Length: 364
Ligand SMILES: Cc1cc2nc3c(=O)[nH]c(=O)nc-3n(C[C@H](O)[C@H](O)[C@H](O)COP(=O)(O)OP(=O)(O)OC[C@H]3O[C@@H](n4cnc5c(N)ncnc54)[C@H](O)[C@@H]3O)c2cc1C
Image (cartoon, rainbow, N blue to C red; front, side, top):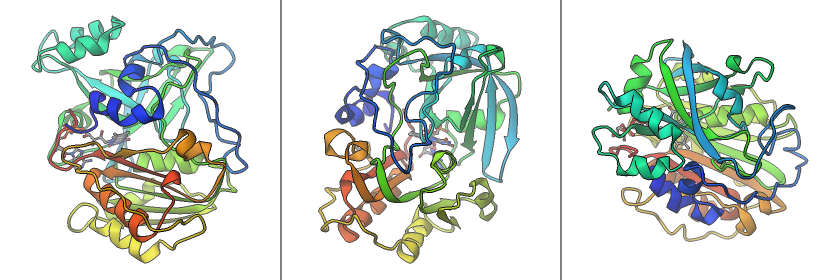
């Protein structure tokens, strides 16, 4: 199993609250806000809640959201945008950057939709979900909120965009991406705008002063990288290295005046071309420490999810020369992690590595 809720729980335990706790709706103490950054000060560091939303530390940090699929837009050969609309989405918190949400997909059968509704109404939904027989247990898959549009004056017009890829071999989410139709009911699990603390699920946490950003990954990381580029201030700078399935997919990425963007089309094995991009374009900058042992992770047995935060790094570090954010297929991320830490000597306190999925393995 890769990146399921239980594993995520273990992987993020170092960050304070576990994902299972947060995403099951149990209230957690509010996390301290990070200091405003010269380079990121224009970027929201906490959910934008608008004028009329009253927050409450006892509200569940993560909750279910019911919506309707409004439209599907084919953005590039690989990237497909799903625009969801619904009154409940007015309560979806929007910290931005790489905020993750879960798509909750009913299994087949007449009672499948009712099973999701029952879970959504239960305060102990995670417990119930884990105890459900596999045949009826809704499938939960992780995606990124590409854009959230709250409409406080008419909540039923609130919307969220999710950009997703069709992949082979297909899984339940990829099948949904291929077959969904406007008008379909779509359930999400996501951060609650009413919760006054940190709901979790945001892993782009650069130090307040970051001289240079390195953003890298595959097509599953492209929505997060795009949103990060849109939200970083114009004064920020860095490089994007991305491997995408099709040469025309490069059009997906937004322009940022301070970033050089290198996109390569996949040719052979997943990640080969990205690695080639690294060796051709990644120049070591300030912020590099001595070369270290990366302590390799067995990505077929463990979740690769290394996001420094708290006293050990991330936003708690005052400054860094380089902040690296790398996400995508776990074997590819492992190889880049080793290259950056062992060969390039990147300071691992300011480098986040996330295995979003693992080749040959379903997410649950
Ligand atoms: C934090 C986070 C954010 C993410 N954001 C996005 C996003 O915004 N958009 C997006 O499209 N994906 C995103 N993903 C990746 C997505 O969750 C996975 O691709 C997921 O496995 C898809 O579920 P599935 O049911 O289609 O396939 P699964 O049932 O999980 O897997 C079935 C098979 O498909 C393979 N597989 C899974 N994903 C891919 C892929 N992308 N390419 C090729 N083979 C694959 C698996 O190895 C397995 O063999 C994100 C993942 C994480 C953890």
